[in-house]
Length: 282
Image (cartoon, rainbow, N blue to C red; front, side, top):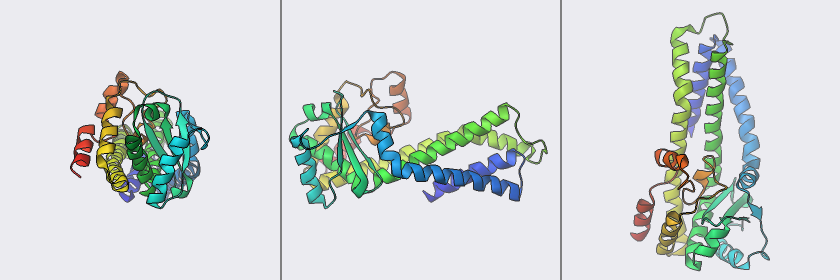
């Protein structure tokens, strides 16, 4: 995360030099960009869970709506020593689930109607344990911050390219041709590099949540069976998009044409075969 922050600072500094700033002016440009980024981070830190649920079309439910699901999640939270999160439901026949929230005290877990219908109780417990582990390991906080940083890099790169295209660069020519070339390269490659960092972090945290979830239920085969069932289900999750795909227990973009190609190129999750093998070997 420290390296990621330094990476963003370096990219902004190159943009500043290419825009004709130097010395104190360039550092001021960087400072303003980082302050704006910090304010965006602060807002997202406290509101990201509500934003994600709204984007996903998830509706909060009570115990009256699904005693069966509440009982599963509640028993696991007691065993894991963490607060009961808010529980949401997504009306979709595709089986999947995800967790979000800045900490265990402000966490939410969403399940699709499909996952409740298509998994048995032990498999659903394995999925719930996986998502609760994301919360307890603070993966939900980490991935929220990483997503914001990736979005910031893309926004800054787009802003610089638009300035360059419209000739809005300072005319004092202090940036120099070399910095203009470096900035154009950075504007094109930085969002890609940032996204690759995000996806690498996401894949590692999925392995950790699998292991933590199996430790909680003491039955890794149930989670392995659930992962296989979810991954083999042919129905795509309509509410998912590339911005939220990394949150789900299994990549929800399968079978969506171009989305499927992009999902294989920029993989948000480790291969299901590797995850299942690791669980079977426990």
